[in-house]
Image (cartoon, rainbow, N blue to C red; front, top):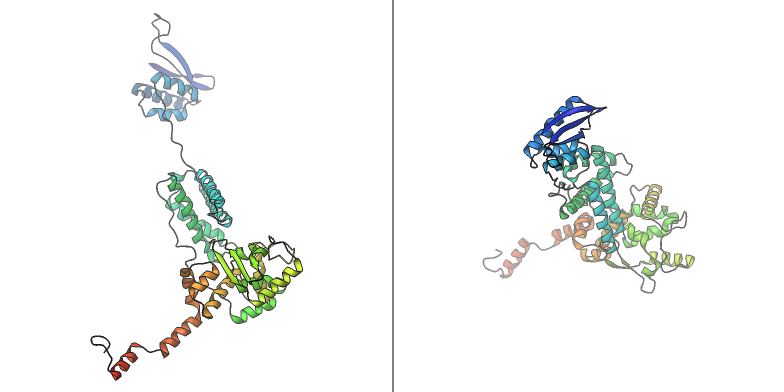
Length: 410
């Protein structure tokens, strides 16, 4: 085979002859002219050299992959036919967009099966979008390029963005974002898109030993009650039930039994049934609201006093903070009412099991987040320690009566 680069017009072409003539008995080899796709003479000579080497080495030559990337498709196809080269189909690389779409579909399925709340799906989608935005700033498309170093850069990038916001809370939400990203890329491992999860957790969300519960003090509750105004029903509902914000805004009239004076609700987050006795103050407020509105059973209990529409969770959060500002109580968010309800029950003698059943939570959570911060419980323990009969006193009593067992307390 003989080849050379010849310029025809603006572009160089590969010209030469190969094989025997198709016409029987001609004794001539087939002649061809194929575009090299370049106007640069030096580049054309390099291509001719690579083509010559690839044809000499045959279909197994590694040069074919290089040539496929630089030659015009028709030229490459003709040369591959001459050499008998058959391209091996490339395995497509998995991208972050592919994973995000798969994970979104998986979450929609979980929501349909009642295995995931829509609010959880929305929070996961928020983290997925943030990570996608970050990857765009780094020009990263494929999952194989998402390394641990890239993930650590994302944490710093996200923290810097969060801290610019008014309600940043010191960037504590980044712990949750890391956990969510770990779950998303764990799904990629499950689907065999990647081999190893590159996300390092930053602890479990909510495991902040320095924070614990933040119940209101007695004088703060009085100030909040005095400042509640048109939102008194929302204040009383949060104060006397300990419902999460999502459950408070989702409460419907059909879930209130006025005969037994109980609230019967399946909690949104943990899907646990809670049966809450309604204290007299809250009961009268609910009764008055029912008589005023004459609502349908499916209607929401809490309405926004400014527009008469059902409360949303963000709006409830804003209204409670507004009450707090009027009362001079900082950070009067709805969850602090839940803390107050739990601590109040413990102070009144309820067991962690009783509190867990009332909150729709687990005993371990109550013991971890509420019990250690109840001063009354610590004072009760101190009183027992100071006034109870200890081992030494017990030993003295047994000696005096001659009842101390041998080999034991002496």
